[in-house]
Amino acid sequence: MTDTHVGPTRESCARIEGAYKVFRREGCEVIVNAGDIADRFCPDGYRHYRDIADEIFPDPSSRPKEIFVYANHDTNGFPRKPEEDRSVAFPEVRRLLGIRHDLYDRIEHRGYTFLVVPETLDYKRYEEMIAEACAENPGKRVFLCDHRPGGGTTPMSSDWGDLDGRRRVILNRYPQVVALNGHVHGTIRDPRQIWRGEYTCVNAGCLSSWHGNYFGTVPTVKEEFGVFVIDVYPSKLEFRRFDVRTGESFEVEPMEATERVRAELWRRDASGEWAVFAVKDVEYPFFLPPEERTPVENVKFHPACFDEGVPYRITLTPIDFAGRRGTTRLVDEGIGKAAPGGTIVFQCDNPMEEMPFIYGLDGGEPVAKDADGFYSFSGDDARLVFPKGTWDGPAGTRFRYVLDVAMEQGDKRAWSMTIRNPTPLTNGHSRIFTMNGKQGTMRYAVDFTKADENFDFYLLFREGPPGRIRFDRIRVERLRG
Ligand SMILES: [Fe+2]
Image 1: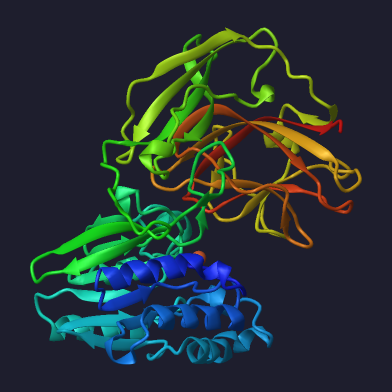
Image 2: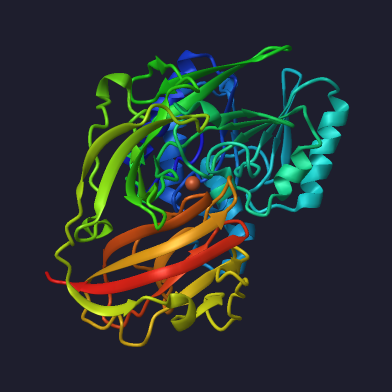
């Protein structure tokens, strides 16, 4: 299990209790919590966790071995100077939870080696531990309890996992390793949570909530209740999945099952061909038990995605866990009507010349332009700057921005887009993931509420690969009510 994110109450440990009951019934000998035990450093939460574990396994002589990964959520809010967090908070976590191993440690069980490492790594020590354990166990699996997955392995590992990819580079050299990970949150109904490549990576999902990387939309918050039980044989690992609410086992989705439904709004482009103008992923509810799932029938695009008198079509296409598109259905077509918007406070039909696009969150160099009028963008933080006064208005003012933009970026990761106030750093809305691959002009229309009168926003692009971007038009409206 992983990312249990408990709080100060015993109720916040309810999923732990369910998990431990499953582990007792299944006769588990080793229990791994892959990190982010509490949401913030939380003595009461650790005490409840310990109490529950001891109630379920009252006899110390027959208790399973417990392994806890020290990850950074357990230092958040520690009541001392930040630089003391890890060195002072982790010994406290250890004491309160009764953890029997150190930050970096090696635990042997019935001939198998388990390595445990903290989230913030000394990579040299990391590789030494792995190299040693693999050399001493030729031909045998070595279990690595590590909060973050290597980049490009399990879902979201490229977006929010091991961002500099150093774990992946090291682990690629050790095919014996079975990494037991967390950090990115997700659901273990997703078959991609077990990844087999240069090594093996198992992402245990979370026992808290998750979002997922859906395009063109702000994902909903989804609760997760799944844990893995892994049976270890000399020649194979067998994975079973359990719901901690009921203790029942459930089946993983097959790779051919629908993971998301992609809604596409089409318009005729300059050459008269139908082209995708806006995309919105609909969360197909595969993460719910099958009997609770409802089909995706229809999708509404933001009203500002339509322009007066312009013909449009809307299609739905299921996409499976391997990323393959299924049969596309036309669900709507018609002639666009202009949305009743608010007061236009800013409009620009030539942002490439008239709006600065600058690297960094402050200061910084302008992003360079290619000869054909695209920005050549490194994928590091860059902000599109609006004229002074664009976002004037009291706290609670509703704004809309409508952006037409063409992007070319890699196939694995894609930039996120966020409206952001610089001081204090506050996002106006959650991250919106842009589309990967090469896209013609597409529209993003977003409504959000300004939280503080003094907030002044830029539009931030980040968290993706190098690529090219061209801003075609942008409009900001102040909405009524
Ligand atoms: Fe977490």
